[in-house]
Length: 209
Image (cartoon, rainbow, N blue to C red; front, top):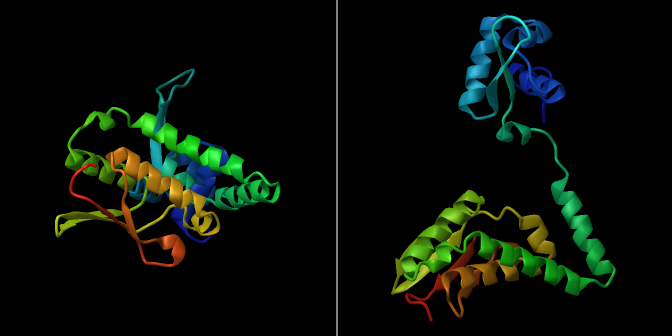
């Protein structure tokens, strides 16, 4: 949440309200010096919360303006989780569980299509490394280690944990995606965050079956 007393947060709020602003405009709004604004902006740029653009003028030199970066947008309240939960509950209450399964299956197929070039890799280790990259980018915080000839794959975070707790179908399709991406006929699920464990822990055989 944005609080009025924090200068950096005031800058973020002003950029959210106005789309883009110059250093001078921000200084005038917050009533501090341009040098002070510039220091805060530099910090926000390092934190990847703010980015700069060059705005062309009808007369004179172009001016530099600042706007929220994608991560900066995340500072503001969103209702995505609540909306997703209500939507999925509505499907179940309307007796549309099969439709829900179909939606999740289509999502899995889109992911497999997205990474189809990586599916050309025959070596399991290469696919495991790519899976690590995919899950890292999606916020799962994956870890992988070998033990007794088996691969132990752990996800320390679940971006959809609240939804997964209510709808185990999401976990099942996620497991199917991992299995099909790796080209395995089965994987062992040791623990699941949706069941209250500290991580999702999967065990893969050392070779594709």
